[in-house]
Amino acid sequence: MHPFGRKVFESRDQEKANLYSYERARCKLEGAYEKQFRANQKAWGFYRAQAPWYRRTSSWWVVSAKREETRLRRLEKLIADSAAGHRLDMLNPAAKK
Image 1 (cartoon, rainbow, N blue to C red):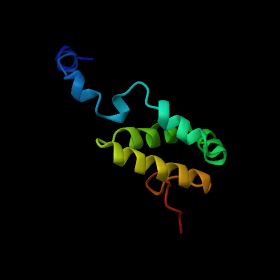
Image 2 (image 1 turned 180 degrees about the vertical axis):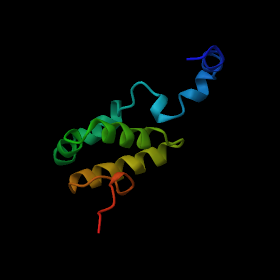
Image 3 (image 1 turned 135 degrees about the horizontal axis):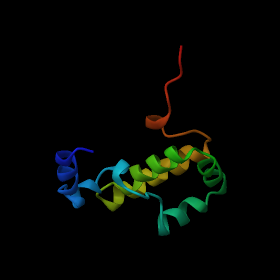
Image 4 (image 1 turned 45 degrees about the vertical axis):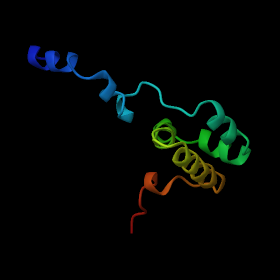
């Protein structure tokens, strides 16, 4: 890295950097969210069988919501889709024609 690039990188705002999922070292469902998800064995089994990028991205979608009601609604959607055996629509590549 060039000295100027290193200087800019080191002067970045850590608070802002943690807002983006790709900047977070770990992003997973924890506590009550994970407990609620594990309660549905079929959904949890499907979710755990998915690729790490999908689990990371979908869990970030849930926990990144600002309001608790939104987080719970997103978690319910993730559980329902997983129980049905399919990924969230926004993370499911469109089928090729």
